[in-house]
Length: 341
Image (cartoon, rainbow, N blue to C red; front, top):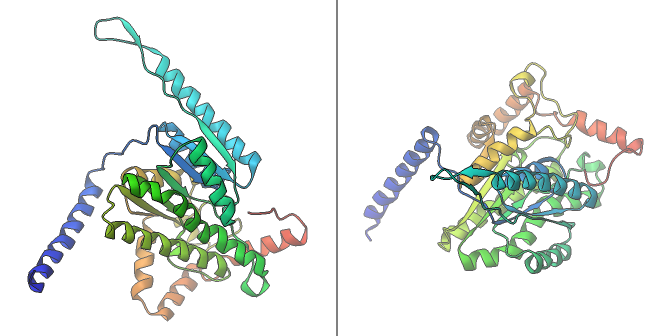
């Protein structure tokens, strides 16, 4: 094809993509069903992972929960089973048929499976993944959610904690995806969700290891998405989730400028997950919460670095992590820091 003609076609497709994106803002796309599909969530024992599990359970997905903490993971499973019982009771309730007689709605066989897994250890991931395939079946929806933060300035952070942050927040995505993607490719069906962070799109001081791990997760996700497109595997969807600071306690103490904070408070975890679920179920490639994060990312890309620094200082974002780090240091000194938080 003549290169000028091809350029014209590409320009038309780009403009059409803008039109479709605008249409989705005006007309909410229909959510797809995940009922009966196997959904695996890492870091399901608490925080966003637990909330994702509950949301998928309400949609009748078959849940596989991974977490390094067996007790908290079982607590999440108990909540999921409670939702399943409610759904079964509602489905079993008699309803009036067209002829006036009563008929029972069919009940589904909903189950939840729990596995204790350290996603930062490659062999642990592969071994647990094999157990899942044998005991549950092939995974259709993979939610890479597990994450940790060290809470130390770079020169004060032990090398072991830096490695741990990179392993859990970034490398684990490689291992889980390699474990479950082959069957998705064979079936041309599946969905891979990467729960990253706004700190995977732009950074701040004091959390170099965390930012690097989240930038890595974002890069991995984007490259994987392009690879699936290049392979024309349109049945496998991907969604990148990049929320602003979420009030889960992970970054307790983090503060921006007090005059700005009322306009940009930490996100409620429930709101963050509901927004992410809507993006996942409508096959949205990326979701930033709140939407202001899109603008921040764009401005970071076009503004000179010194201009970005000025904006950070005005917002109080340049040292927003310092109170959090100070709290973690105090907790460590008092032997109150918890493993893996």
